[in-house]
Length: 305
Image (cartoon, rainbow, N blue to C red; front, top):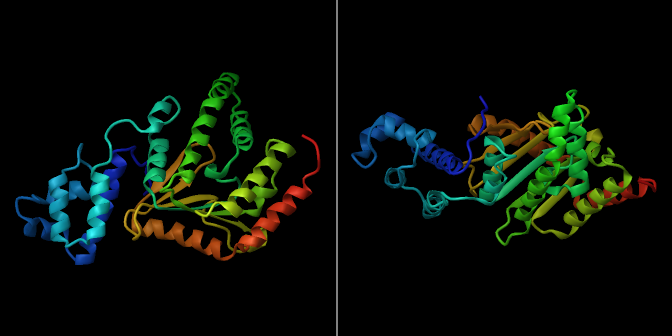
């Protein structure tokens, strides 16, 4: 069952645990067999379970390394785990936004920072990593105005700029030297629905066109509405995070329209949503067709605010 992934550094412990689970499964060993074979360096059954489930307050680095030796992990896998073990325990840039973040957002930001590959599929909205300031503000304000309580609406409106600043800061991830590869499937509905007025939407569509055409680590494709009439995506806003080249440590995030979301990391659950994202990708327009579609949407927007 899905649950909110804890924030960094617990996120790193979760990824290490997932790596160890997969290595054990590849060796065909049970938890008890590992405990029996491991000796003092690995410890008891409970110790092995704590490593895999990341339930301890701290990560026992020597135990993790002993398990890697027992499983005869590859040099690449060992390097990836060492990187996670050395993840800074101090502040991350999003720590300065603790007044507007929580466990779910902290976990999301940590996964973005740790991933080599990010795949996202959005049916109703432009993905957050590709939103312009005007579009993001319009989405936030529309959601906040749905609250019937005037005091709640006012409170949310006061923190809109702060939330907007955080969202735009996230996007610097795509400009870094070691930026992840982002594959974005954007449904036709998201690019033809006018949010924030025509000028705001025109700016958003031009931004998508520019990113899709010029940023080599971003692969943007438009999913036609006709492709999903008989087989819609299993969720309207899905994102897959891959911190490793292998399938180890994959996490799915299901976004709930400005209300946070849910993480899934069990392989069986991840496969369901990854398969849906991959199926949607197969039905998208080509790169040039997607760029042409965006240009058509821009031209179809009449002049005016």
